Image 1: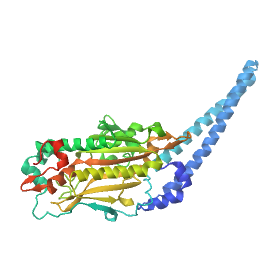
Image 2: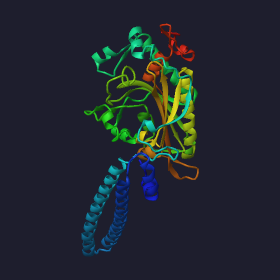
Image 3: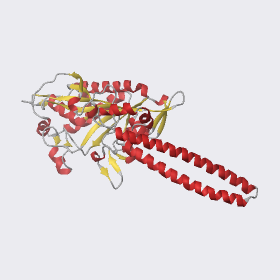
Image 4: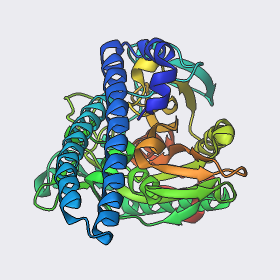
Length: 422
């Protein structure tokens, strides 16, 4: 969430930056500025009223001590009016604050300067491509055919027990899932990330803290009886560890990771774009999160990108890195890099990771600050990335590494799965 100081001091820059997302926030920004000005006026009036009331209370006390009860009673009548005025002013201020927050929650993060304008994935920038991009779609099998033939993933059984988008993994399919999770967690540990096993459900405060609410409420599974949501990613519980927290510069950077199932209600269409493992409602993912000083977050982002690259290279998968245009970025991100792996059998790129810097946007909602060497309290920067999401990684492994009727397991992964082929 943008801060009021940013909006007051950088109005024109914010409006211009958000125009790169294809949105015009001029009306909302100006309403916030007016409401904030009125709220500050009400605050001054409230402060003056409270000061006047406190002064009268002291005078009443002195008069009572002096035995001047009649004069004291006259002042008491006046204080009743001041208390009523204070109450009315507080109510008006709360109304202004509520209206401001309602507007602030609708305004996305401002894109970084290097993020280009654009409306969709067609406007994203390809930063680099790695590995051999071979199109085998004419004669190689798709991952859903391989999964059925090898009896390692059962989509029909998942649909029977739960519904579409909830597959069963079995035999070597289950072991491949477990091995990939171990592989990703071990690599995160080597990179200095502290592992957590977080809850799979969050409350609404956590959803607001990282920006899933109210922006993505319709994409989350909601247990209304308990006012809880199934997590869409481990980013949410991990980052919310530091909600309402004051850190010190010595605490930073903080590096967290965690494996969780992820749950997303997002609707899918029919066809190969969403077939098989291409889009699921429940899937496994290892997430990495960093909390850093603002001056260090660019370097932290570079480190996270390098980390994801090393995972994909260890899996021997062709991949490319894209910097998302403003219109294709998430609501809370200031800059996002997507990683896509090449699917040889499908002949297309599959997104497997997003690595983002949110700068102070989440921190302001979380109220996560740090005290610098001079004692000043500043908002931290938050970052996160998928390292990695499993479904499309598994799809790419099955499709890219098929040979002579088998699927070969990458050398680096063999110790984690316990076999060298399927």
